[in-house]
Length: 129
Image 1 (cartoon, rainbow, N blue to C red):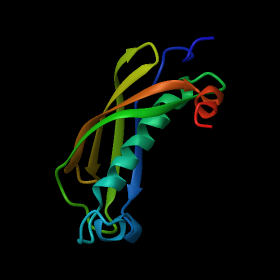
Image 2 (cartoon, one colour):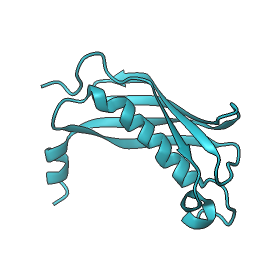
Image 3 (tube, helix red, strand yellow):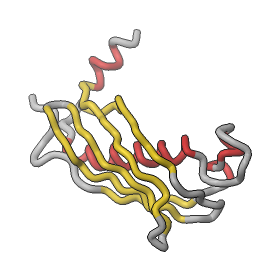
């Protein structure tokens, strides 16, 4: 069984609205009522999962193994952030994605790279016990 079906991952764009629970103050990563870097990172990972999901065989999933993110602009509560994930590299089970976040007016919020590895779900979970 191969790890991925067909051509592999696709580019994905997801839109999120910054809520009170997404702020640095709420998540403990600062004291300001702006988008927290950990939440932005989670959104970037969600985009990479969505990009890889259509290509996965049944019984397979992916896990994040490396993340590099530069959070370069603040996003207030209520701001819409468009997060994109574009596949850039594939080597067997390893997949790299270029990620970015922008406000709806085009202002760049973040850039980075996320690496994910395809795993067999049951085997991965069995190793935890």
